[in-house]
Length: 525
Image (cartoon, rainbow, N blue to C red):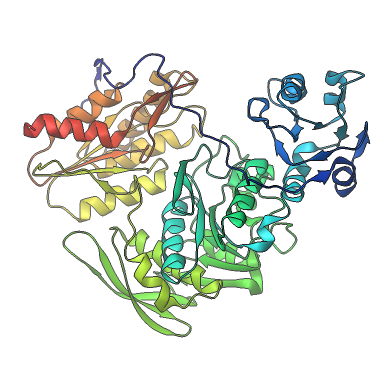
């Protein structure tokens, strides 16, 4: 195996060019709620006169007139330090803790709700301010390590085909009544989430499909949300920078299903293709409906057929009978995602036969997304940034070609470092060429991240030639130059993302555009 490091000029990172901030999404006519009522509802102390609030916000720069400013303790500073700026922008009250009161001083000019754990009550108080919007929606929460985004898109399409008017909240974007806004977090912070739900109610949405991350469940972002259905995809290595161990990671996901949880979904739909799904079904108990592509379950599949273009058809054996379905995306894991989606639609009262035509139409940005510029080999961009997801997509692509497979991959900085050597090992074992590059290094040294991936790849002693090229555009260009007719080039890790975070600044970068440019250069377009 060969390991080398190349410095290539970076044409897709204009210095100082930042991606634009996204507008706040809020209802146009929110209700007014008294500060005294809010304090009483969370058993908190109120200091100062009573006033009405019409919104809530964590970020002082996003405050709108009439807002309650949530001044929470942070890792490096206390939110109360920004209260004066929030008040200047129109905040009429502050939510904080005793430490925040000390920061505010003796006379903050606005009423202050003092809670022992303001983060812990943020979800419920946000829901109260926006009129408990989830009570008027069919909310489907999708959680798991991989497949949340794809499953959410499939559910949304199934609900739409059945005549509902769903909204979508997830990793890629928020979609409301045909409007799309790129997402900053998989699951928004509680104030933004409840505002979104209220806006959806205002615009006539009747159902919402929401990705629910382990961070959101652990930090209470979805507290105050009533879930009609919780759907579980799978569990594998990820977020070990945030969770103390795998059991803690599982426990966070289990909040959506556990009987003693305040955010437990009324109905659970659980994929039991892995051991963690079996365990989650046990946590959910009698509320669980199980689905599987590999073992006995309430919902199963058979007769899976793969078309030349990668789309798949299969029969769903449901409790009410057999339904034929198709999914445009390749990979057995996407059959599992589609099965879970149909069962989730059924859990909110949609007939499976009404949902499957919608599911057949779905393509998901950055998920096994083909980039074609007339080249004689397959070029694909995929969001796989975890060992299990990476293994699945490389295996699927290898099975679909008689040629060689090149993988371009990195790992995110300030995130789970334990998975980096595992990703290298998986890629070295399954690919013919592995080019280790930068992903979103954030505040970390990019070379340190790459070296961890290379170390795992080298230790694997797999089939792959290993190259290290820090510049992502250069790495993609080299993979394209390497490919021969019938080969596959996979650019993994960033998928739909349109920026690269380097040193805390997000520069414009889209794997799909960069790959397309490299392909056009090769074919002479």
